Image (cartoon, rainbow, N blue to C red; front, top):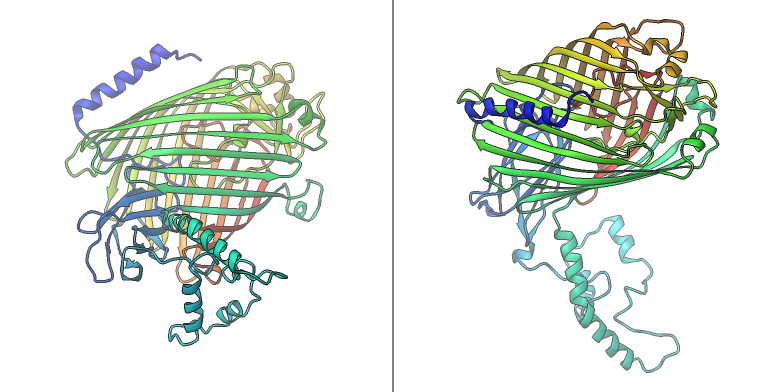
Length: 631
């Protein structure tokens, strides 16, 4: 690493000091769907909460789950605002103790202002929730009265489902209050005992059920199947192994001053892996200070027969990460954010990685339309980190692949990136946002990922196994311009063009092994890269179909074979289609069917090296399908 910590801190101080004198910034926006695109403007969702008499309700917790998760608490006039929402569909819910939760609904959020109204109804006209009797624990006389008058009730449900439920064979739980025991003539003692038991445990059971039903938790459950293929005909063969199953759960629980996020997933196949992550965001209303902290832990274990994978994973691989970021809004037009990530990968010679980052955002004009941001970061990336990290947004779909070093002599070497960037963003009209940026990167031990190759003294890689090596050190500087807009109602598109000029300084240890099978990983000393990345996010009206597409074109992709010495023009893509299944919805849960295909290898493009995706050789197509339940 050529930039040491003292120099890093000095540069950070120099970056922050001039900005403080300028004045103030609006809150920092969340990353967009394409993190590579500069995005300083985020959407907001405004609304009001009222009761069944159209009176405003204060203290209602409103949450939104979609591209990110956010929450707000209504004020005395029932008004609320959800900040920092990337454009897209969100599942919006409202909760207040003593009121029936409003039915969750999908709201399409765009950069244009959006207002909604939510109505809550008091439970039985009073604050106390009703007793739970159908489960079989409760007062026997109350249940008997309910059953005796059920047929006379004008509000009885006469649907086929309700009729079948009423005529089911009585279960042990349903008969618990009658206390009829075979062969026992005197049931008075047992009836008294069961009555005492109901009195003893009835309140805790009701309290637990009420607590769970009243808990304002948003989340999603993904049940998915995934596999990789190089050519379409591979989908109908077992050459690349059997599909693997994925289970992923995400929960968000807002509090009065912040929110808890918990995510976990597991996949099963030749390679079994699991990950669990949790974070807490402290964001009190009206405060100028907030922070975000959390941690994650992941593990892989291999049960297949690839010799290189078994040699590299003699037992299992473990990876853990902790992070904390602090944000200060010094005044309405100045915002400072700083923090760091600390990670540990047990398969590295030096197992710990440290990645600090700081940014300053300034709104030089009083209307806040123009925003300027300066970012300074040092990032350390472990080889194969994509197998252990959760994406910043969206679902986790682990590819279920193993990896080993391209050179057994030199092993794994992490990549180190020093990144400095200045960006500006200006809204034009009500639907267009124009952004520009300039950056410089210093990269040590640029990573190279190789699929479908046979290195000397190796068993050869298939779609389920790849090799990781290093290409060398490179300095890159460049600029970019982006345009994003709401094309029509429900369609948001963005285009980002980036031009970079790179100078390669020296090769890394073990580069020669990689160059034997892919000579174009060794670049010319001076090279110019041109990149065009587009994204389209669309909500098809009337069909509840959501389509998300990323398409990346670049002039510097590494050639997939040894026939050429120069990089080539190429493209990568990521397509995801989700279809709502309203006929499966129940209570506040929303069902969706998901199909996604991609050969874009890296999940997160934020603060990445300009060569990270370019130095991935022959990435296979990765297909994911299944269902998602949002609640």
